[in-house]
Picture 1 (cartoon, rainbow, N blue to C red):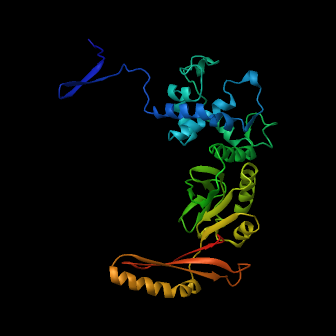
Picture 2 (cartoon, one colour):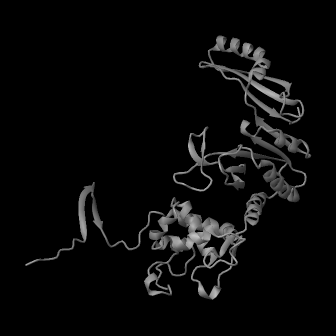
Picture 3 (cartoon, rainbow, N blue to C red):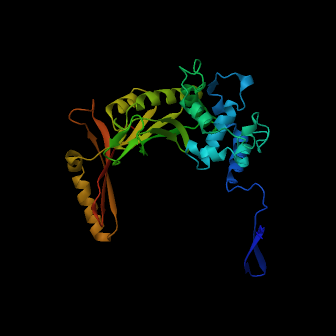
Length: 348
């Protein structure tokens, strides 16, 4: 006679005097408890509420189950917890913790309208996909893709959050520019091979001030790293100066942003300075030769890395419109010479 046995617990080797037992009656358990801390922070700062307000929702409010804010919050919270792929939401829509983070009134999903959806408190990948693929130009007339983000409002929000984080206007701020690789693993639109990163990727532009993100642009990788930087700086600096008209601003970046257009833009605006890496060449290394000789002598005396700095005027043969202030670092280490250069318009 066939019998059915259901083991409700498993005993394991004890730890000291502590009994170790495995059971299956813990209820709804999640390994993403840190998301509750994110929720507390967001409820205080209202970042996701303000971000969601940058979306235009053209749907019939009486015929939907998820507000734009709930959809945006679900997607952002999942990203913060490490769930990057939309396909993850086929399982995550069952997750009561993520439902709490998204602000759903019934995290169990038993209040869903359709019987087949009950138990699934959150939106699935198809609904979220519509959110991400909608465009402002088409959302009003589309049948499905009817929630579109207004990018200009998101741009302003990022800078507003930065400004609000300061009780008083600082005397100086430093804005950092950077471009990096975003590897592509499929046949995405705008796919190009990048020789420096040796992979197919996008080349997003990021603009930071300290830990605050001021701007981000997703770009194809078949462009110069500095492409579009002047327009982004124009927008960001104008918004900052509306609030802090007297603040002095330093633009800092590596040699990928050492471009005539960026330097000329800074020089054309009051109290905007740049400190940019400058790729070395034979002319620059020749100008630094005396400092390298001095650094070599110091290294030989101490057997420790030695650095000597040298400042001089420099102008490229074709690309620069004027002579500019260059500072060279003559560094000598056990591995050899390591000359480095920056160009700046900071006052002496």
